Image 1 (cartoon, rainbow, N blue to C red):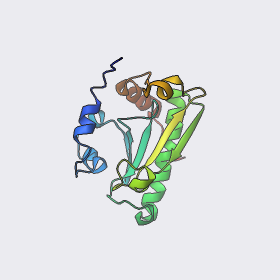
Image 2 (image 1 turned 135 degrees about the horizontal axis):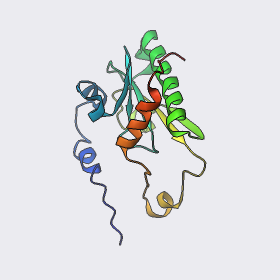
Image 3 (image 1 turned 90 degrees about the vertical axis):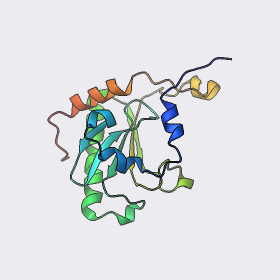
Length: 164
């Protein structure tokens, strides 16, 4: 039997049933680098997913805690989409993906890992980014560390405002 270490998963496992909202908790931090917050807007922000589907997986969330898109104000919804567009631009600059999956999972039954706080996923994709490892071994290989990807994203975002 092969054993693959994924020590970073323990924090996630231990806090899986936490009543704390990760989206509310992360923005309280004074260190965007430690929380992997890429950009802060007035009503919403961009953060890296700590458990990404692919390298560069970002999420955009409003600061206000709500579980429904229909509860967002027009200004919150507009800024959310502006930050999604901004995220797509910087991911193109930083990582040069072939495409994207962009969307939301609303509610636990829809696959939301954190159903209490609405958020959008921006997942860069590359031709051939799926391989035999997840299929045969239930293992996903991430080709780059979160810190390295974070640096690339910040560098690509320098001087790029949130307007499309």
